[in-house]
Length: 173
Image (cartoon, rainbow, N blue to C red; front, side, top):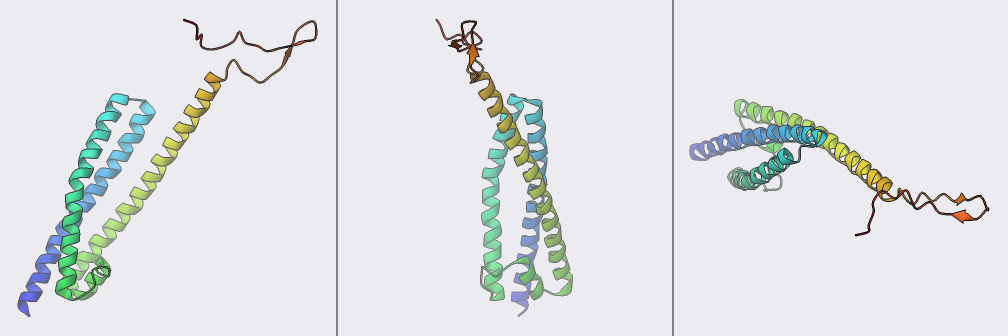
């Protein structure tokens, strides 16, 4: 019995370390989103490219961490005798003594708050990028349709004339 309890405690400690890394990753993601919005507003393409490369690299490294967390979760489910799908932090806390359970619940609360903040920041970034796309589309439509206003002009003899001399671009070579 002591071996199983010791094994559970060791796995819980591993899981808490893993979740602490998750919390740091979420905080880094929040930082990335803030920096991304700032660079989009500043229109700093070079720095934006570097930031996106860094995010891609971090994402690749985080994949290994994700599989490690799932492995620990799977082992905890096996040791406790619970289905893998039902092995959540709430379920784990109910199996543990009070001192360990409190640590798990604290981590769960911390992660929930960080995820809530991440969702808010993600939504803000999405809205900014959607607005930028809308303005760019409007600007392009305005520039490319400059010579085609859709208005009909009449000359002094009463015949219609299309205004073609206001084109923004000259396509002649």
